[in-house]
Length: 154
Image (cartoon, rainbow, N blue to C red; front, side, top):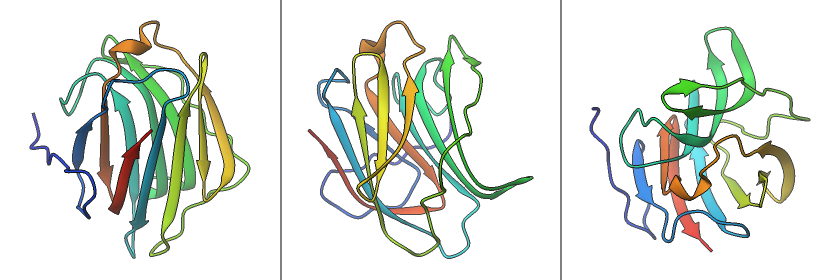
């Protein structure tokens, strides 16, 4: 298991970081993430997962912002992981909202059957729940080429 940095709320911190989601996820829960991609980013990833392990068996949602990762350039990949197996990637979005060295604000809204993600007050994507037991998703993990300035739950 890779070392994880546990991130106290209300502070600036580097990645990787792991934060327990107070009360877990449920419909109408919102997760607010603010950060700044590095000046020469490759990618950063945001995981809603079960437990604090680096490679958990269950990930309800991963949003992987790929600036320059292998053949991917400015691609936003979404996926899930169940019982250790990755699902089918989703890659379609209207635009890639992240720019090196430019701050962003992301909101993840949990709904009954899907996640909705907005960046800088613009709806970006929806991702249907693929894991049957969403109540097992209790942790936020963020890795990669991004400096975080805020994580907040509501």
